[in-house]
Amino acid sequence: RARADDAWTTFMSEEGARAPAASKSNPMAPLHEELETLAVSQEKAPSPAAASAADGSGDDSGADSEGGVLSDPEETLAQEERYERRLANLRRRRGLRDERTLKQAFQLLDCLIGQYKLNRTDEVLDEIADACEALGGDWRVKHLQSSAFCRWKQYRFRDALRLFLRQQEIVGASAALCENIGHTYSSLGELQQAEQYFERAVALLEAGSFGNRGGIYMGLGLVRERLGKVGEALPILLQSLEHYEKEHTSGGRVGDASILAKAHMSVGKALRKLERDDEAAEHMAEALRIFRKTCGEASPLTASAMGSLGKLRASQGAPRRREAIALLRGALERESAKDAFHLESVWELLSQLKDTQMEQATQSRPQDGGRTTQLAALEAAFAPHVPLVRAARARLTRDHEAADPGTVAVFFKTAGELALLAQDYAFGAELLHEALRTFALVQGFDCSSLVEGCHSLLQIADANRG
Image (tube, rainbow, N blue to C red; front, side, top):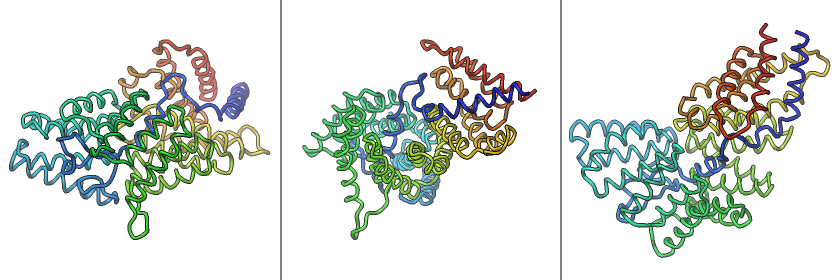
């Protein structure tokens, strides 16, 4: 037991020493910053009533519409329930190939996609696919467009790109469609193509094509930022924010709208890259406030904003650490629950939460207590996070393991470390064994140091369980 305590003390000191750098990047998986950044640049598919299949247009920038997501999450849910009832009634009375039934189906899809209810979206898309194909024309294009938005929000960007390009083949280019394609290329990391499509969208917009100036500027600014042209990007993103503020001003007052939150978040992230963290935090906090009000606490947009602000607060040191922990916990809980579960986002949040909590525990650890007192303090600090680990783990599937065993492995290792810090030794050992099993599947990367770390942690777990 004494040797186990010594090893545990060493583990704690090493954790404290490496905490600030531990979550900077995942060496096992591709950078996915664009997923979080660009996922807030589009909120919903266009209202079918407002979309024009003649030019393939649709405002996906997130502007509110009667057919889409309202600014009150409770009213949005009530709207969804009304649409479901109407669709069921029309399906029963008129069948799926009646245009009134399809119009109602697309109103429901618009509402579902705006709320990121993507599993139900897939069900409706599958149900009406044959009818849309049989009727052809506008209905085929609308089905393509809604399918593309759903795939985009499921992080299936290559599938979304294929659908958007197919739409372009059918109806030709428009500013709005070029914006959609630009966002998709950006999310795939193909930034030169993305920049070209956003620049083309600007040109088409100036020529009178349908599109949303604010959304196009936001997309172009985000791509310039990711290309390292942050100084160029910030004025473009500020233009986008100014556009949406004017658009949502009534009676001299700027109203709350989710697209404004997205613009604030984009500006905040650019400011952070310029190391103007206080200004960045102001924009991110405003984005979070608006998302909470307009989209609700459970929205993936709220989760993304909480995570971004939480990471920023964690970097600002002790005065902001408690706030950072609360934000990171909230983001992790929401990311683990959403339909489009994204493993690397969850792993990054878990890693940042563990490291930030360790910094807080190190700062506030009892000075006059022995090992037992210090371990009790650690358990009190980390035990509340264990249910979040269990919830995230429950979302993992064999598909995740087959597609990206590296990220699965580092998730299990990080989760195991947190469980040991909470002194849930049995659960921690279980997670670490899963990490070892998954590391063995990784090819093209030297995992030896990570595997060695798992074995060292298992020695601690076994000694303390014995």
